[in-house]
Amino acid sequence: MALLNPDLASALPSVLPPALPPIPVTVVTGFLGAGKTTLLRGLVQRRQSRRLALLINEFGEVAIDGELLRAEGDAQGQVQIQDFAHGLIAYGDDEHFVPAMLALAARRAQIDHVLIETSGLALPSAVMEVLQSPELAPHFVLDATLAVVDTPLLLEDAFASGNAAADATAQLFRQQLECADVVVLNKIDGMEEAPLLQAEHTVRALAPNVRFLELAYDARLDIRLALGLRLHQAGATVHHHYTPVAMPGERATVAADQWRFNGHAHSGLGAHSHGLSTHKHFHEQDPGWQSFTLRSEQRQDGDTLRRAVAAAALDQPILRTKGFIVTGSERAQLLQAVRARVVVAEAQAGKFGTQCSELVFIGYHPSRARVVQLLSALTATEWK
Image (cartoon, rainbow, N blue to C red):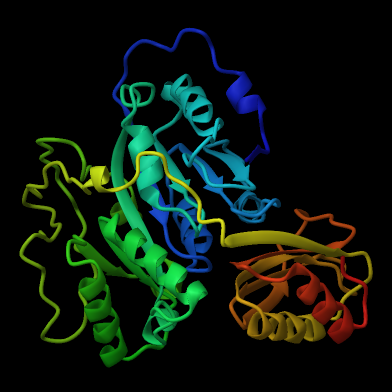
């Protein structure tokens, strides 16, 4: 596990400030490529006066998502971003998550809310358990856990069991849903009523105890659904001023264990238990999930590389690819892929001065040598 900004943890004072209300924490989970970072970027843009701390965990050795969030800019200094790369925070022998959180606690007066984006290969219960540890419990309170879903992939049965890679994917996806308070159906622009209802049915079949199911058109979620829910505070009686987006159709009813938010009634939501005791206290990473980074110092053609990455995903069990590429353009290009769906677009101005193309691949027992061979052959450039 590499902590890309160790200054945060090293700045931890020996004595924490006097007792203040615990900092609320929202955990954002979701499988690889679900759109977690894009959703967070929208929340950051609409934060209003909230002072946020974002902890971004990436399985690969290169932190891409943190750079994307930094590209939004923060002239007022209201957003602090911390990267954790090359591993899963709060798992196994991770030694960085608790010190980083304690460093945030030491600056309690400067932070209104913490958002933690877990790796797409992580169970949020790992973070949730550590938040309840003696070190962190006095300083933080879990506000809610959001699970972001790639709805088109869900409808394609991409999370169904099958071979070893499919079984590992299905198990992890289901467990992420089971840990969530709110499931967010993402990538739904242009969808008709029938597939949305089918997606809702599938989610509720996999995780019947999910409390709310929301729609994110254009990858945007009302900030009042992500911050300030207080779903895990015992005896909480909270005013909410937002009604969740209803699922279309006559079947769009609120489940028996749910309440709609409204501006005139108490939510009545008390403490919510996810049954964390059913998970291993010592979270262990499935060694089948592997990541590697490939680089090329030669200029790339965006369309050619896009086809090459898609071909590699069809040839190998690669579920996620992301990174920056150097083309003839003055700015670096951002490549994002979920399985064989690949998109290349211009990166934010002035943020990525990379001199070489760099792509992170994540999959279940993928062959690095085979991907190197495919990319080099199909782009007529050297990748290594």
